[in-house]
Every structure is written in structure tokens, then in C-alpha cells.
Image 1 (cartoon, rainbow, N blue to C red):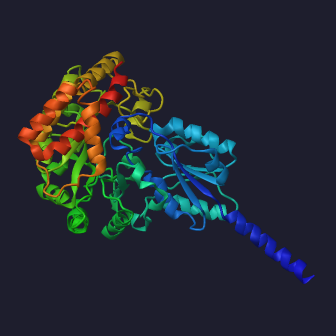
Image 2 (image 1 turned 120 degrees about the vertical axis):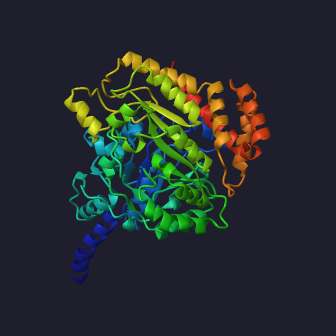
Image 3 (image 1 turned 30 degrees about the vertical axis):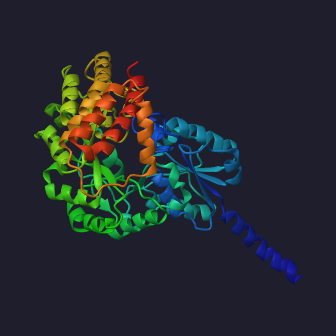
Length: 513
């Protein structure tokens, strides 16, 4: 009788214990061949993906430690039947541009009988289109994931978890780097801040993350860097913040001094990030960023037209000499990557040549030019909805030549003008001319990244693919000769930009045919 009673008491406990332990499959959908996928450039360095799935790696650190975990980044390797058979639950995160791959993955997980949990920007705005997903953990996971896990443990999880609040990043755990095969990636990524103080009406960053810039502590950032370094990482790291300089005071007084100290003896690692154009106004900030190891920064230029800047509330770009701002940043030791848009209501047919002239004169080699799109949640989306000008969902691909709004300009005129921009700026002659414009301005920092085997491999492959069989072979060899004579220290930058140009040209050629 005693053993029967003991069994009756213990067996349900063991059953609950077994149910609580789940094999977790973290899945990152594949990116299509886009401007930022760098697929054609990655072939030169023998890598499979540009960046790791930082969101999923952070989620992994927030799950119960007793749950076995496996990461499948489908940009790096295929999702297999063995993966699905091993798992009890799939966590999927995706951006809008990964929509098609996400649908395929959700279908496979449903067919395998897995519990499916989804989050990230795609599911934030389109969760109603994924009926096969069991649970949506939306907004910032630091706030919504704990509630889901609590309900799951009690056996009554809801379908949607969301929050209007914003997370305290000081409570965000470090990413679980051990799930990654670091050798498959060209760069790593970490996050320092969320939010942006500006209010561009086409941007959904503030709709999702707010205007108040929230930051991790310097100790958190250094701990993440230490973890990566301990695992052998010696290459580039992307600070994924939407506006890295949103809190200049904290940067100058805390984070950048900590990074400068951390990089002593670790000169092989370089950083890049995103910022607003007002970076050009602060020479001491730029100097500190360069000393801390930053060598590239993406900036949303959008348009040289003042009326269009006013239209989209890009106030930080108004009443400036934007070309000179770019050159000032370049001379400080930071390469500028630029974002540009056509299709504003105030755009005139002359805008296409004006954009071309700006891009060429500024020396922005990496120039992402897209048609204006209205993401859900933005003020632009709401205005287009009121005016009856919405035409479907945005693709999330910045350079695919599509738009989800009815433009004020004739759509045919807009598309033809847009194609003309891409054909011009990514033609070998104009692209290589733009590289020389940049290299002429650029002042490289004294502390630079180390030459690695992957760099040598890229150089040798560029000799063949660009210098022998590529359509740009004349421009390629001319660039290397010019750089060797004028700026011999900048040969690595020249070769790297030539390789990027190969990728951009491949992507843009599909858009203009």
C-alpha cells in the first residue's frame, strides 16, 4: 500500500518534470538575395552569412537553462528532418524581408508537430497571417517572454503576448554565442541601445522601440565583447543600434572610453554601426569613435531635396551641406554607407539626376537607393491609409524597386527614374570613380584590423573574378594601380569596396531588367 501511494504521488511529479523539459529549436529564416545579404561578396571570403541572428541568441539566454537548445540559421545550413524530429518546440524570429522563408519554416514545423513560438518585426506586424503559429511573443522579449514561460509552465499559455512598455536593457542577458559556428559568419553583432530621438515618418523604429534611447551598461557591452573574444572572434562587430549616437553624453563619458581601453592589445577587432548625420557636427565624438575601433557608419541621407526632408520630418538633415557633412565624417576616419529614397510627394523628375550627382560627389560607395515604402505602424502608413493610397504590404527589401503606396509622381516615371539611378551608380565606371572619390577623402585610423587568411583569399579571388573575367576588369586594375600610387595604405579598402561593388551590381542588375 505504501508503494502504491508513493507511486501515485511521485508519478505525476515525474510527468510534470518531463513535460517541463523541452528540446528547443531556434530557427532563423533565410534572407533572399538582397542589397544587405552580401551573398555575392561572401563568396570571396568563404563565409555563409553576413551577421548572426542576434535576437534568437538573446532569447536563448532567457529560456530555462535545463532546456536543450539547437540553433538553425538557414542562411548557414539547411533545416533537416533530424532537427525537427529532435525538437519539441520551435522558436522563430524574422524580419519582413524573410517573410517567404518564414512561411515555409512554419509549415514544416507544423507538419512535424512542433509547438511554434514566433516573434520579431515580421510577426509583430503580420501575426494574423501566420495561423499555424501557436504563440506570438511580440514587442520586446524582455517583457513578454517571461509571461509566456510562466503560463507555459502552468499549462495555460495564451496565443499573443504583447506590451506597450519598453524594456530596461540593463536587464538584458548576453547572447548565447555557444550556439553559433562563428567561422560561418563574416561579422558578429551586439546591441548597445534601442530607440531613436528623431521622428522620421517612414521609419518604424520609434513605433516599435520608442524615442527614449535606452542603453546597456558599459560593463554589459564589455562582457559581451569579452565572451566573443574568448571564443576566438577577431573580426568585425556590428553595433546594431538604429542610432548609435542617440545618447552622446553616455557615449563620450562611459561607453567609448571603455571601448578604447578594451581595444588595447586587441587591435584586430573593428566596429561599425548606424548613426544620424549630426555626427558630423561633433569632431570629438568622431575622434573617440575612431579611437575605439569604429571604421564605418550607415547614415540615412534619404534625399538632397529640402521639401522632401520637411515632408518626411527628417529635421536632422535639413539646412545642411550634406555632401560636406559626409566628407567631414570620411576625413575623420569613418566610411559612410548611405541610405537614399525616391518617391516622396515633393519629388520632381529632376530628383533622379540630383540623387546621382549627390551620391557620386559624396563618394558614398555603398549607396542603398530604394523607393519610398510605408511600413505598418508609421505615420506615413497612417497618412497613406487616410488618403486611400496604400497598395499592399512592404516587402522589406530596400532595393527591389517596389512600393506599397500610390506615389504622387506617375508610377511608371518613378520606376524608370529609379532604374536609371541604379544603372548609373552601379555601372563599373561610375562605381569605381566613386571609390576613388572616397579614398581621396578618407583618413584611415592608425590602429587598423589585421590581415587574415580570409582577406588574402578574398584578394586572390578578386584578381580572378574581378580582374580577369569580370566586366569591370579595366576599372578594377586601374583602381588598384591608382591606390598603390596615391594611397598605398588603402589597398585593403579598395579591394573590399571592389568586392562589395560586385555584389551590388549583381543585385541591382536584376532590378533594372
